[in-house]
Image (cartoon, rainbow, N blue to C red; front, top):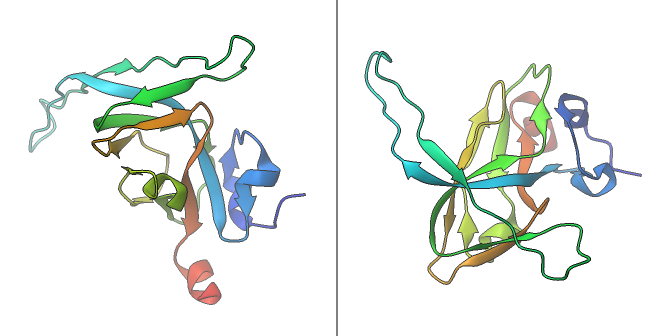
Length: 151
C-alpha cells in the first residue's frame, strides 16, 4: 500500500501508485522525450507566439520480449512529457528532478506548477543518458501551508 499523501488526490494516470506515492511527494514518470526540430517564437504581446516543432525520440527494446523500450540520449537538450496529469489543483505544487536523475547526469528545472504539468526541458550531460520508458524522473512536492507544517 502506498504512503498517505494528499497530493495523490490531484494526480491522475499514475503508472504504479505504491511506488510513486510516498510521504515526501509523488514521483512522476516519463512518457515521451522530444528533440526540438525547429524553433518556436516568443514575443512581448503574444501575437507572434508559436510552438517549437518537436520530434519524438524513438525508444529501442534491449531484448525482443521486453515490454518497454529505452531512450539512448546523447548529451544535449530535450523536452520531456510526463505520463501523469493534474486535476482540481487548489494550491501550487513544486515539480523538481529526482535525485536519481541528477546523479546520472540528467536534470530539469524546478518549476512551480499552478494548473497543469508543462512539457519541460531536460538537460543531459556530455556522456549521455539512457532512460527507460515510464522511468521516475521528477517529483511533485507540496508548497505553502502543507510544506511549512512538515518543515
